[in-house]
Length: 239
Ligand SMILES: C[S@@+](CC[C@H](N)C(=O)[O-])C[C@H]1O[C@@H](n2cnc3c(N)ncnc32)[C@H](O)[C@@H]1O
Image 1: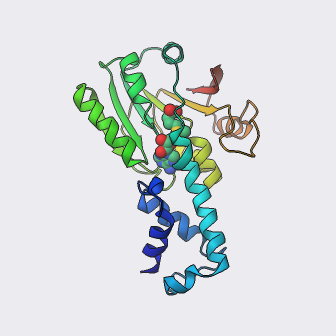
Image 2: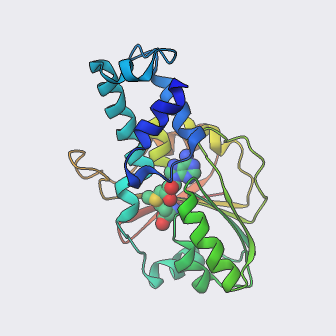
C-alpha cells in the first residue's frame, strides 16, 4: 500500500524510527492535496516526482519539530528552577505531564515520590525510559503514549496539576489553534505551561518573550493566569 510505503520512506533515518504511525499518517494525508500526491499511485513512480520530494521535505521539517534534533539537545533545568516551580504551584498530590520528554527523571526526585505521576509523550523511547525509572524507584502513577495533536479528546486522568512544558509551540506550528482545542479538554486546579525563550531552529531568530497568541487564547477563554521567567523559559500559571 502506497501510504505505508510513503510513511516508511519518511521514517527512513534511524532518528525517526520511533515515530508514532498515526501521527505520521495524519501529517501525510493532510498534505496529499497540496502536493497533488496520489496515494493510489505506484510508490516507485511517485517517488521519482519532484513534488514528492517537496512533500517529503515538508513533512520531515514538521517531524523534526516534534521529534528529531531538538530532543537530543539536553536542556536540563536546574534543581533551583524545579524548586521555584514547586513553590509557585503550592501543594499538590498528582501531576499529569503532557509531552513530558525525559524531564520527570529530573523532577520526581525533587517534587517527591509521595506524589502520583501520570506521564505521557508521543515518543515511545521517552515513555519506555520513564517506565523503567518509575518501576525501579517505585513511583506511583502511570506512563502512557499520547498524541496531543490528533488524540486531544482521549480521556485523560484528573490531577491537581497539569504540566505542558515546551510542547505547545510544536503543536501550534503544525496546526494553528490546536493548543486551544487541547486546553478545552484539560481539567485541573492548576495548569502550568512553558515556552523556551531560545529559538528552536536556525533562521528563526531569538523568539521574543511573550507568546502573545497564547495570552490571547487564555484571555478569550476566560482563564486567569500569571507568568514568570526561570532560566531560559517563560512559564504561565493558569487557574
Ligand atoms: C522540547 S520537548 C520538552 C520536554 C519536556 N516537557 C520538558 O520541558 O523538559 C517536547 C516534547 O513534546 C513531545 N511532543 C511533541 N509533540 C507531541 C504531541 N503531539 N503529543 C504528545 N507529545 C508531543 C516530544 O516528544 C517531546 O518530548
